[in-house]
Image (cartoon, rainbow, N blue to C red):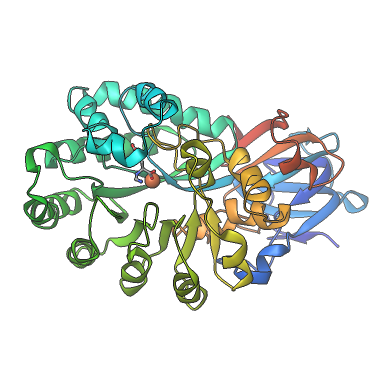
Length: 421
Ligand code: NIG
Ligand code: FE
């Protein structure tokens, strides 16, 4: 029985036929999946998929395929999946930091590099000297890169400005990217990523600046959807975070925060207290934090690419799912701790290092990522009326093959808003 959104739709934009497996179908339109629900991926074998006006409009079995149309794409047995939803990135930055990569090879830790004035402050110095146009040019290369690797919805943070002017510059670049690409872009203000150099040893005054000057300025230009704070040892305290999230809530900016990457920071608790959409990183959470996440809708977003790159422990995603939390996986694409936005790799690390099943890892990188950006009504699964962001793979023996063959270039064609990119 074919599933059609609207049988009166006359203009058939596109029909994809001979799909080996259509994966990520969700007729029930879950906004997120939690716990055991994450282990079930909706699939249809030997299927067709229809797109009208850039939206998914129906699917069914090839034995029941609609009439021919002007625009038929033969998937030739390849799989079709909803685009990845990468809910945590920092892709607007200037230059790169491979020098620190060498420092790390030589034994320095992330915190030691930060203490020596490297890390985030290093990126802030470079960003300050980079024009908005040049920053846009560099960031667009990364935006195109992640689209070609299957990402269809992305969150991008500021946080390498650390002055009001430079934070606004970053957020304007994010807005320009959003206007230039078919991928959906959400913007997060992360003024509290590190204490700006001018405020060295004056952390409290910097937090005042974030609350009293930056947040109002960002809100006045409507440049951010969310607010973030790096709530961790050596960066911002729970009290700082509490103040910043309270200030941002006056402007309707919902939190998505960096928490528990370097220590058991109290970040999960303060995030949940402020009804954060997500708390991210979570390499260092214990049973207490897992119990809190299991009882709330705040997404536990884990970033296995950062653990891989920095040699940190992986977040306890398996335990969090078993405890009924809503778990998402994201890339954290940034110059210091995760210089890659490859969500396929993130999905595979979820399986290999965090012991998620392929179905769980796909759900964590699609629908739950979309929810962590407040966008799961429109993205993250194949459901009637959702934006037609998807890709076609080469034929595969099973869905389990997808995260297993983690290096094989399986993604063949990417469609965003129903159009090839
Ligand atoms: O998510 N942890 C904080 N921020 C980034 C790293 C930023 C950087 O090193 O440039 C992260 O890992
Ligand atoms: Fe991050």
